[in-house]
Each structure stands twice: as structure tokens, then as C-alpha cells.
Amino acid sequence: MLISVMPLTFLGLILGLLLGIASRILKVERSSIVEDIEQLLPGTQCGQCGNPSCAAAAQAVVDGELKATFCPPGGRAVAEAIAIKLGIPLDLNTLCDEGPKVARINEALCIGCTRCFKICPTDAILGSAKHMHVVFADACTACGKCEAVCPTECISLEPVQPTLQTWVWSQPAL
Image 1 (cartoon, helix red, strand yellow):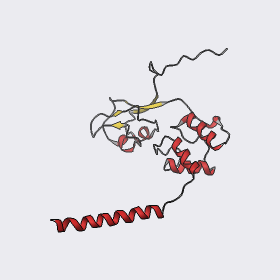
Image 2: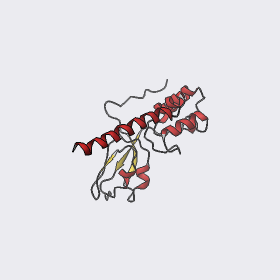
Image 3: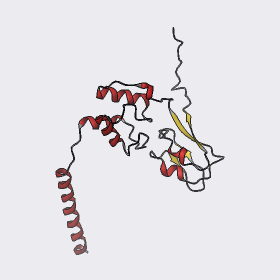
Image 4: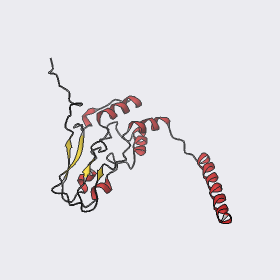
């Protein structure tokens, strides 16, 4: 038995060592500003900005290909943080900030087709084939992918209802 285990162990050690050396030699250096912008983004890889990932979107905004208001899930706060980080003026007229939203599933219409949770980038939808589905509001970024793919149109994006902890009285302007 030892004779059959030793070659596999030796092969694993050699390949691991080669991969470790290759990762250090072939490492692609990235700008620190791109990494900082990527840390500001939600990191859901939703693709609403037209880029395949948040890293590609961060690179595009640093290169000047995207405006600071490119991230719908991030909203106004992320746009302001990106503008401050890059030192660029922020045009909030192009930002469509309707407030926080969350996906809701109408259980009476849901047929359990599983298309919604297969496409959800944050795994905010739970369900199984031919059973009801539910949305975890804490994980949902309201990207709208599930709404677009639903064949029965039972998913809708609705504003987040204020709770006792989040409600704020808007004082009248003087």
C-alpha cells in the first residue's frame, strides 16, 4: 500500500511546488488604484454596468471608459466614493437612484422552474424544481436578472420597506 501512495504524494508535492513558483513568476501587476476601486464595489459580478466582472469595471473607470455612476447596485454612495478616490467631478444627473430595492416572488404565480436562482449572482434565491422559491433580502442586490428570466413574471423589484431600525423622519425644509 505504501508503494501506491508514495508516487501520488511525490507527484502532488512537485506539482504544488511548480504552481507556487509559477504564480510568483507570472504574477500580473495591477494598479493599486484599480484594486481600491474594486474594493469599493459590491462585488456581485452582476454585469449591469456592461462589464463581465467588478474588476473589469474598476479598470474601465480608471481608464476613463466609464463614468463614476456606472454601478446600479452600489448606488449613490459608491459613485461618490469612486469620484472622491479618482478626483473626478460627479454628475448625479445620470444616476438613477430610486432607493434600495429587493426582489419579491409572488408565490401564487411561481411554478418552480429554477431559472431565477440559476442566474442570481449572489445566491439570494432559494428553491428547488417544482417548489416555491424565496428571496433572502439581505443578499439581494436588485440586479433584475431574475426578473428578466422569469417565465411567469412572478418576480418584481420592490422598494425596501422601512423597519423600526431604519425609519427616519424627514424634517420639513425651513
